[in-house]
Length: 361
Length: 122
Image (cartoon, rainbow over all chains, first blue to last red; front, side, top):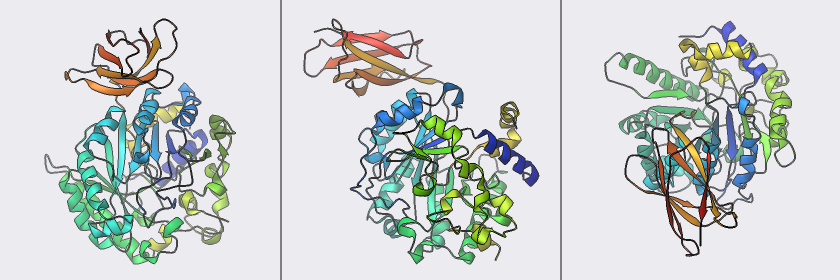
């Protein structure tokens, strides 16, 4: 069912005013075993940053009042590669024993049966594993030979686990756009229930790599692919016993005529409205790929996290500042509010990526 | 929109999609399982009451009959054990690799407190 825009706008205003925190990232390491071409964090195997002690993050969780912890409150371990932390199981238990749900975003390289059993027992209830192409295409993107096989193994383990809300995410580039149909069939054959596609933002290593970024026609082809799969799934659902994979575009970007076709709900960047983060150096921000120099709101080593969440985050909750550059005279600004916050970096004079302008061509 | 109206809206099946989201580069929201909880065990010296780290803990917390090695207690003498509410008792084994403390087997049947203090004796 399509949600009328005037109702959605009222809903979005209400959510912004209430700003209930229910999704908290923890950048628990910036070390990574891979060297991905699209990485926005520029992570390396030997990061200059030391992993934050888990006790420091637990203090943040303890500072959130019990009355402000909805039961779906999820903590997302991200990095770098979270599985490089030797205490990952204790981290999970610490989060879950405080009543929070937790999960992680992983490249899957170290995710085998033993790791899976440990993490499930530590209360992990959601997981995202990245798959960026078939065979060499994934390895090329990830900068390490054999990473495709390892990711595939991880996916096959996680897809069978009923206690996990699991999805696979694919970063769509010029290189893998033509493989989407085959990736779809592969994931379906492994029993994956949810597949999420997104595009690359021009930051970090991806900034100057022309292979990473889709042009207007390719962006449209991606949307058509997603909508086609969603429509086929709906038609297939009429057959008893058949359940097709849910294919969706990620929450980034206002999609114009593809709104509520390429994903369930209308576009809504919830950074700073429902989403916060604690970054590797203690910076309090929203999604980790948002420019931390510009939009960091405090630091857990100097400020009270809960006070920062309640009293700061103004640029996230009032996006009128984004009405500049190509957004200044845009007729859909009211619906888009300048795209996702992660699309504003540096001097913020111009949005880095506009899905709408590509799709309306 | 006040919180009361928001909760009403959240419960309505037609608007569920509005509340289910995941950050662009995040994971889906977790699955809430109210059948489980997490029991913190604190191992202390039976005489001095000081915390004892490095004690290996094994548990039997479900009907599988399989003992699970939880790990060792930290410097505060603590370790967290996941327990299903479907389970009416937790069986535990404590052992000290250094041999300073006598091994102990115990069963906990009262889960009203999230923290259980376990004394070990030399």
